[in-house]
Image (cartoon, rainbow, N blue to C red; front, side, top):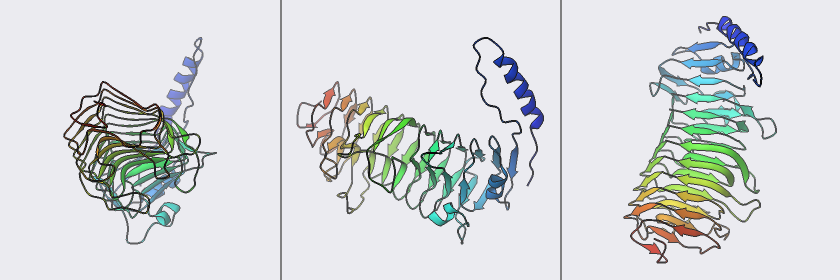
Length: 358
């Protein structure tokens, strides 16, 4: 494995930052004094490079197929490939680490009290894992960009117990559950937590059970995504817990023809033809979306749908505005739980239930 050192560049950068810090009002950012670029060739181990890396290092993965599960616990690590020609897929025997034991492809793992911060993943294809393609747990500022997650057994990519995540310009397709899945925590009950501006933007999400799921979170944006050919486009999920899920933005997405059929589970009826669904949330702003031709006969079918949560909690104080909807059935805009203080303004649609929402 070739690991050319960039210490002389880091030293020059440190000098420059010190000089800038001496200017009035300047605040110097921390500098990694010995950043290293580790280059991994086909046949070599990515995990070995990860294990050897220090905070601030970059792991550059050359085109090829790498069969392993990656466990990342180092702050400020960058993992970058060469696009879809750099492929991470399962080995016949999972890697001997926590990520391999869990069945995920790439795991970035800290704790809620001591998160792993500023890990960046980009320009890879992660495919065929039994569970999640890319999964962050206990992270802060994890970024996944220009990456494809495909044909994974649960989520394409996502995070829990995490803040300030960025999922931008990715392709997540044909995963058994969500293209992007974001939650407070996956294995405990509790109220919504603050995502602190987590962003899901510019992604292409298709062929999954659901394009995007946001569960029991606050302060997050889902914007500018293209979401099609799933059973459902966007699910914003809350319940009666305190604090309530909500204070979210769902805006400027193109959500169309999410008409695949997904069978009922022990918690949900069958899903088909669901565009944007709110269940048990408050203070969510659904604005400026194009929602077209989502057609089905599920209780959640339709363009933009407000539906009582699985435990019977209504939606409240949500603002549905300036969306353009057509061809959704049984309705473009459906308020099926009639929770308090939801508002519907300046929407363009052909049919609403009840009438008068367009």
